[in-house]
Image (cartoon, rainbow, N blue to C red; front, side):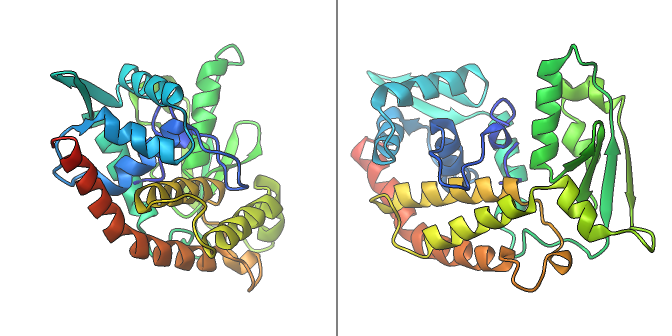
Length: 286
């Protein structure tokens, strides 16, 4: 998945829970679809499969049904009916969002960028457009930007700003934004810059929580629920750490350890989770 854009736009709109807070049901479903459904050539999924999954993750049936309804209204899912059974499939919009997320989610080194490369972005949004300001901040946060000061953001690496701001709902901002790729000049205190733009201790804490949590037995039962929760926690961590430069953060910076834990646990869970999904679909006539 690109680590998903904001719930209005995709996963990037979900609040991070890298410190252990519960995920929203939509975040869990997007994790599930991204890991097991996109490009898997599956038929529409019966509602019972999705409701059972969310129940295993502690979501009530009422909340799960409300989430499916909202995701349908927001253009992320399509709903069909076969007899008395409702079934759901991803829309092209949702598939596109999840595919774009995949590059970073599946990357062997999602927290690494070419050393010394940065993207600067300056934009202006009227104070009266608070809804737009929120969408811009959410999109930029997911894309790896941290705020240096009002209207000036910085991200490690070279970011495709056109892709970040290119959706129609941000067209007003795209026309008022200027972006530059560059390197710090000699004398720039990059360590201080990083600590000004990001809450570095909070990022470290998020990594530590992820490593500690997924180095132990999963906290839910069943491989399908476990893989879904792993993906939601991983997306949360990717949203928290845009790939801060380890050279500025010391040799004990935990990003590489987080990547190793994610890959090990994902590879261990994925075959069983795919088999569990197949069994659920067969049990419900798919």
